[in-house]
Image (cartoon, rainbow, N blue to C red; front, top):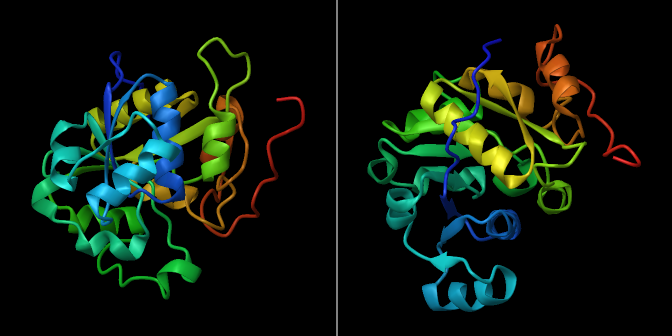
Length: 234
């Protein structure tokens, strides 16, 4: 596994595509971390604005194109089945964090991945020209808010980051750190399989050392037993 590190200057502005439960939880977490938050959704802008004024006050309603253009990073917080509705041209050249998962109850049967081996590679093939990174998908909305910790915390939950573009990975790792988590380089985008549902890392609470050990262990990836919840007292 490589040893890439977070960018020295963390992102200041985050674009979020999707204003569901996870997207709004991410918005609140980002706002608490001092980021400028731009949110786009298929909802009517007036309706979305009224909703965000209650659920994520301080977030701005924009188009997907503006979120991608103005965001230092842009996070996909939509159901996987909606990915094909996104315009590749909008995300060309941008750092795009794939926080999606294939969940049969929402997405139906798995998509035809074509030549890809993971859903994130499938996202990358659709958003040609984007710099796709996999992270933020392996913890729930409540955990995202509850487990975010300050930089001075002695115990911080670790999140893995997988991607092929070193600069994009560095930016994503810096975002993870600013949100209140320790970032662990998981390797190339294909390694994002180790973060998907049914993997050991999915929804498991690990510190940096334990997560790194898990990701580098033989057989890491889908099919492993899921980990337990955050340990008591952490």
